[in-house]
Image (cartoon, rainbow, N blue to C red; front, side, top):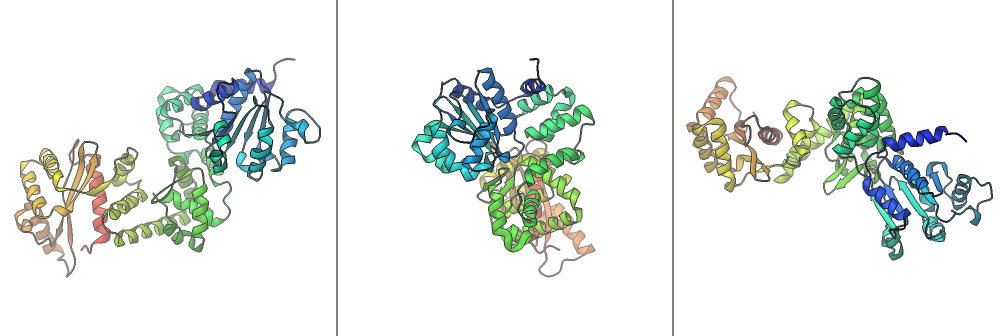
Length: 486
């Protein structure tokens, strides 16, 4: 019999496959009997490459002369009978389900969409899998991590390997694009745009090879729709969809914020969001993976721009209200929330870029950091400004905000708030000139203050330094929304 189309497809997929070295090694060790592992769990969000990995595992198992059964949980009735019938059909048998439908010795069972089979998870663990031959290998792939019973049972701990699929690194992303025929010149841009998401990288590669290289996700409607389908699948109600939109809009989503966007359904929506595999949970709230955020943001804005703008306002008002009520370091965190909400503004681009490097915390400065601040001031603005800054810091040190790097202060901002009660208001020529202008053009009313962003600098590029811009933007936002400014 000649070569079949399926053989050509399998060969093409194998040539295009990149990455997943850890998972491949674990599988091949199991197939070769070099590991006690016989059941592999692979989990991760939609579009992360679970199906692609299973198809590659099928190719490798066949190359090792193993019988392979590949099942899709979405196509199986989640019952013992339904599962056994699917195995029987995959083996080419037409017998009634039962022991005769079991895997032959040495066979490899690959199950995609395992989250769809949760009703028979217990049966598989207690009955079916223990009955298999010791040289069978089983791979279960789904969106959700295996429940605790797979990890806490002493027997299964020795037999099960759990692999969470992560996004591709830059090298694997670039290799995928290269194998797809994307020109070298545009690969770095697509790597940044796709953020290592395998499905996104594949669709971006297709767009680049067959048409115009997109500048943003919004320019690739097929990509956005494909990704959104995997992200929105399973949203029970409109409130859950709004919850996803809230996650896309806000830097961190809390249950308090959800109460403002979905009302009384906030606890249920929170619980649902927390279980989504593309959403992470930390001590201060929830956030989606960057690509998921980009896709959701683009699609919600396209589908319902007015409604999405209204949601923006709700999130904005919630953050501002929280910032006004907060104290201490909570203010710094909320200021970063507000900066992220306006991340497309040139003023806040520094925050968006530096946050990816883990260096975006704007915090109150300490006295032991004054020498570093004054050194930066002198380099950027000269000795006279440094002397004035030193006098301000000596009298009113609490108005200093800094961004700290691994080797000290990376950037800072210092504000003067009039009336300060300091003699420096008269001695500092810049502050004096500002206050004279205010008195002449629009005198402050009782209880009002004037904010003067007096000094700003960074270690590398002075006032143009991204850390300086970040410190100035965050500290200014705190002042603008929390003080009675004129």
